[in-house]
Image 1: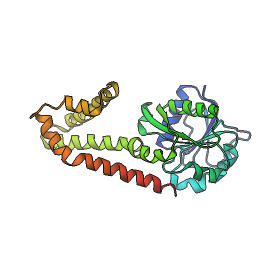
Image 2 (image 1 turned 180 degrees about the horizontal axis):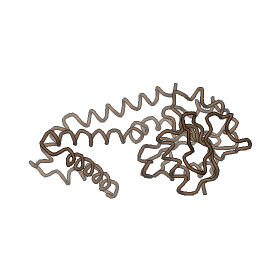
Image 3 (image 1 turned 60 degrees about the vertical axis):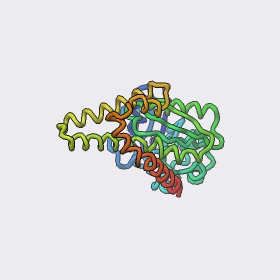
Image 4 (image 1 turned 30 degrees about the vertical axis):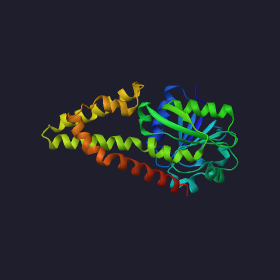
Length: 261
């Protein structure tokens, strides 16, 4: 059973997290979101503002899933609930120190999940701030493992490149599938088949990569026959792609740092 949580912000990631928690059994909780008219499940009470939270509600964890640009306005009213709980922030860029400046001297864990959490295949990296007890860290691990794999780091600065790689990373894969589908259509493949080919190829390659102990480079080399079709394609992609990926991740890392405000 997962203990009660106060979820601030109920967007796509909040929805994925609540679904994972409910599958494991969730105590009575509150979802705080002025734009959310209905509860995500019978375990939740929906509150449009802190004033609507039921009297006496004492969550074990406060989950910050609001947009980072809203933090200055959204966080201070949550301070009474953060005392006696562990706060888990999934806001991109917002530092532990910045969150504590808005909430007070409370234990904060900063985490970065990604959208495959919606099918419990997410990747989350977390960092514990001052005062996070072993018990609180274990609770955070339980909450985050409900949506996939969890890794912890001691250096908070690593969360900016983590955001660029795994937090934003699904979009890079979706772009690859999108471009493969378009190119297939341009080569005369019917649109429905083009979509199937692109999606199943990306999904299957990802599953193979996850199941294999070999490096990604070794898997690439294994499917690339000298002078063959794959080599012809990679000759085009590798002329520009590696540098472009590195620049893209560097740009996302910079933006994550800028969001600290």
